[in-house]
Image 1 (cartoon, rainbow, N blue to C red):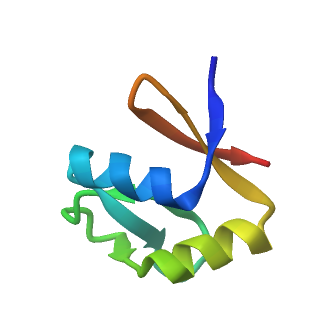
Image 2 (image 1 turned 90 degrees about the vertical axis):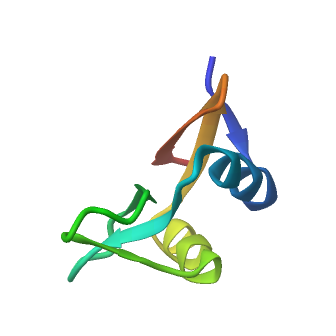
Image 3 (image 1 turned 90 degrees about the horizontal axis):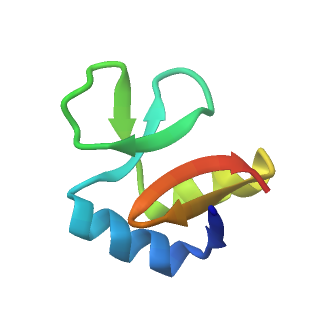
Length: 71
């Protein structure tokens, strides 16, 4: 069962998984990235959190797997 997690736990899991917050260029779609996709730009955690709030999204986790979904 997926559990909603806060930004600090998200950062910890992301660091262990080797991913960073990213945004699809030109739109406010956020996701996690390792940085190799040319369609994505790495953004700050502050921008990531702001976009989540603006779009009424949250990060959910289960067993180390994270997913961004409606809050």
